[in-house]
Picture 1 (cartoon, rainbow, N blue to C red):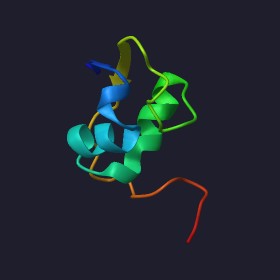
Picture 2 (cartoon, one colour; picture 1 turned 90 degrees about the vertical axis):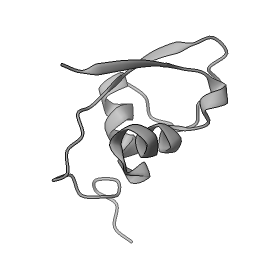
Picture 3 (spheres, rainbow, N blue to C red; picture 1 turned 90 degrees about the horizontal axis):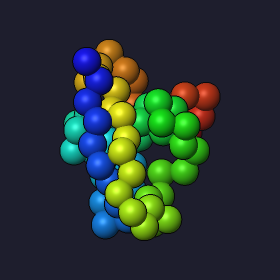
Picture 4 (spheres, helix red, strand yellow; picture 1 turned 180 degrees about the horizontal axis):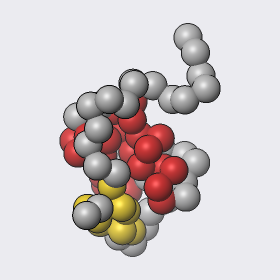
Length: 69
């Protein structure tokens, strides 16, 4: 079952959320995709917004898909 959390601008960014809940800040894009977001910045969230979190998946590679260094 997917976990939901409430976030506001005070929570910083999806990087912070991913680090805390998924153990890998670079997996912020998974949270974004699941919630229809494109920007990791939460500064525009004035009121609490509910986000659905993906399950922790150790097989996920770090980084953003399609982007290489």
